[in-house]
Image (tube, rainbow over all chains, first blue to last red; front, side, top):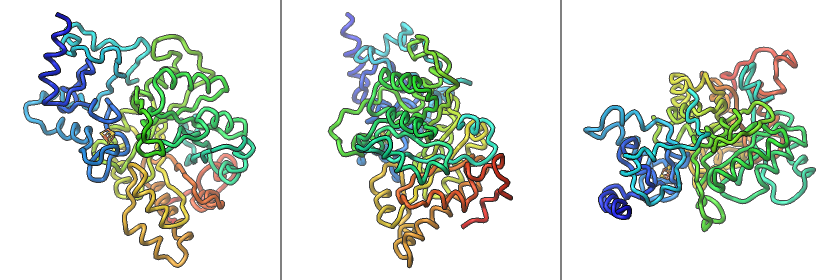
Length: 124
Length: 314
Ligand code: SF4
């Protein structure tokens, strides 16, 4: 039943995190804040346009996703220390071919950790 | 070359924004930069700044090189996917251009075509890593690329936008990803810049990358109000705007303000130079670098210039 899992995953994650089904979930490393809800879909921290009040450059009525993520990664109770530290790590480019697939399955199979051959991440 | 200055830092580096072209020729561009180019080490070939279409980053970078000015070619993530961005880098390399600066980019809503599709296939830190990879000889896919020389990979950071305690960390992330030059967003809040620089000194980013704070030369308070209201990520305090508006000579006061901000920035530990955006077009860039004694006209290896102190100005 390859079609069922994404449906179940979406049903669970959409109401809580406004999940966009990118298929390569990083919620654990972003203080349980979905970076795909950033209008620029940034995976590595806030853009330079964050407003003085911490709201989004693009949607002034919304708190910047990354202001939220950074705050929550530091303050959410019960988050393992390794998850807290990961907020500052470099996440690879989104694999657009995974859009709509189940990140749960991709986690189990390791598919979500496959990066392009030339991706070198950080140098140090 | 900019790359050598960034590596050796023999003196304060000065870069400037290249004016955007909407028509005209390369010769016209040469005229427009004539009062800036001699006083800076390199100029940014911008990539549709503030989400407005202009002569492209690639064409401008080539034109600058033809005019004898070292270009720093900007690449923003807003308008092109990873294939097109890498193609622009490969195209620039064909002309011997090896300086690239990665930006996330203002949103399309900041420009005059807010109905455009936003791309953001990569983000700023990812683009830094991709540029560094091309400098080492591979496209993102792993396919071989032959760079014509050593790459200088640059990035930007906003020292004054929330979340403030995360900005220096983000600067270091870009350095970790391969950036050796960081141009900062224009900043009218000296305390925030000082805090940011102190944090980049603590986390090592300032040692591993040349960090250049930015100033913007304007003529009047109206321009400051515009930046405060319209440019994403820039906050100009009301008192600063009032100071220029209320001065007997607002144009002079606007210059003095920038000189003060620049002198303060240059006095901060970890600062490696200054980036200038000039909207005055009246020779103010020359006046600024001469009064601050920075940049190529004050290169100790070219001329004896006496003591280089910055904190005394303004
Ligand atoms: S302000 Fe925050 S949420 Fe808005 S586009 Fe920038 S990073 Fe994304």
